[in-house]
Image (cartoon, rainbow, N blue to C red; front, top):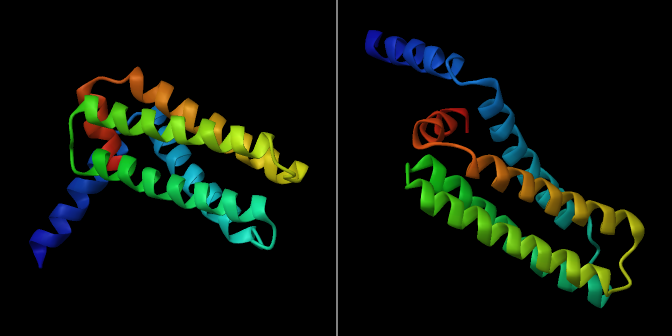
Length: 140
């Protein structure tokens, strides 16, 4: 039982050692995940554009999960950047799809926010070295 308490204290110390920008990056990833999930749940799916957007959002959820898992299971920086790049391409596709549809203004703004947030996450990941990626794993 004492070993568990020691491990928890060691983990807490490690998390405190994570730089603020990595904590903010981890929060941005969680926020993006929440935004995509909530946007998908709010669609009624009665109109064709809503069904199409729902399909895109489920793909974004899957790609976000892949990004998070590549970080958590300590994959290489190149694999993490590839996962972030694929996510950004899917976000741009979603923005393009909604731009040509009868999507309402609020949904369009939310989709643009998703894309901007994904691009920001990718940009931050590109600036990181492998040691910082390891610390990000602790923050996620």
